[in-house]
Length: 220
Image (cartoon, rainbow, N blue to C red; front, side, top):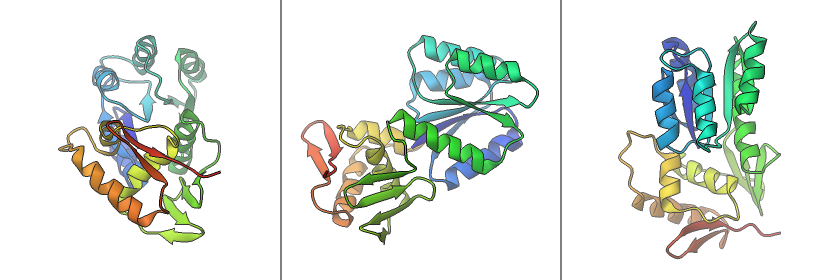
């Protein structure tokens, strides 16, 4: 899953990027409102962590412009402790959640997980597809209760399919959501990850929609 982190404090941005990356996310960063707005316009993200006090263009304006342009990615805004009006303005502008500074990293991670789950219609922290269970809190995958060993890229592909189970997901879409912007993206490698996953998962879960992409089919 791919996140946009917009924070102008270099130290906090570095800390957040490290923790989010360790949690399994692909993280893009922006330190000002103009760069943030541009990235949100041209790149697909599963969620955005957006500080409101940004140089060049404030976070609230960035959020309003995204929503006016029809961009629906979930947004978590970061606000100062005493700026209660920012919470109200942010929610009214289209934010999905807010977090007050200073905050615990565990809470930010939990809120990001919840935003991504809700955006794809899931209520539980555990995503299930037949005998396959993905715990979004730990990144652990099990099949019929037995732990499954996956590489980081295999996990990212499976997580995206699990969040969008039942829907056809193109190779391009998968590529955009598991690689960073500066990475040399090659959609052909998706076929390799899919082939590896098929060997590790129960037969028939990942279907190929010829010419369109892949679909995770979950038995009742």
